[in-house]
Length: 221
Image 1 (cartoon, rainbow, N blue to C red):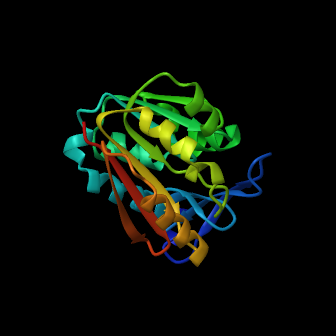
Image 2 (cartoon, rainbow, N blue to C red):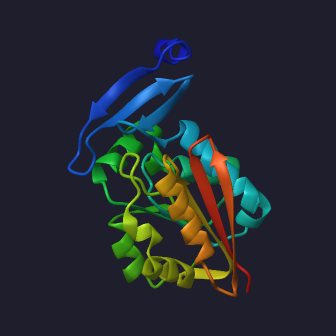
């Protein structure tokens, strides 16, 4: 409790480790809440939770509550899952895909992710999982970063087409991206401009928490 109180003055790191996939993983008390960070980016809770919460509000909580199955690609500490369960009161199935088992251990230890009853965690590469799964989803949340870098496959046509194929009628994709320079800004503009699918609607929500841009894709029928 003392650390939580003092964290309103300065961040207080309580755990730090490395894994085979992440150079640095830190759990820190910041402004009275526990957050999960990499060396240069917030991975869960803190600003990331606010970003994805904003995206979910844009879709509409009333549309999310009756959904049957949500896929989260990139779990980290599980902040968006906690938003779904604790704030939106979502009771359907959640499948979370995370490539780094060490991060899931931290999420269970410090953020009690393993207490979410309607959650199934799959340790796998998101690209591989998307290729293999035969399930269709009402909402697909894409939040995949390696520190501040996003894997190139997220923006490739094959992956985009596969994600859209896995979406149920009237479903949504919420894609969190980071814009740190002009090349990334152009990358997102290209992504949106080349998205020609008559049964889908795409829009962007720019400059969420300064450096993030959300892309929302809706399946119309």
